Length: 166
Image (cartoon, rainbow, N blue to C red):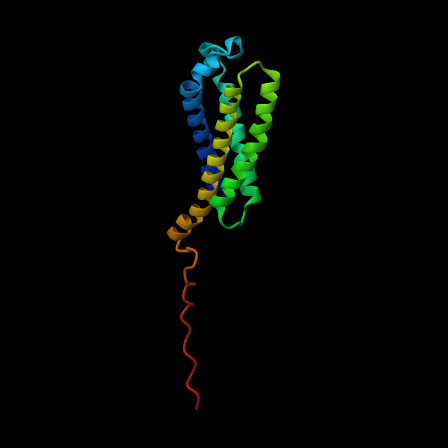
């Protein structure tokens, strides 16, 4: 079950981050990014570098999922812990990234804050997704195998009754 939970989490995080990045960078941030002049690659260059983006998103999903399930193996309240994990990882990673990008590149404060907000939201959603997967998957698999949490133990094998005392 650990492998199933890990693989489902990895796929969910990879797809979720990809979809959010696709929506936000192509539609929401597009005008702000293009207003930055030559700092942002052209759409043709971005399409050519798509494998690099996929690799980065897969590595993010792999590490995020691995450390979440490594830290919270047997923890209770996994959706809440997932929220907190995503909150702090997102603040740390994307907060530092935002400060670094603002310092290094001549981009607007608005774009830096957009990217910080998106990264933070992605991490929070990814953490909650992993928390829900880690919480609900044992219930589903346990229910299918008859080992649901809280189920009574199976009856003991029928033993012959002891002879009556005389």
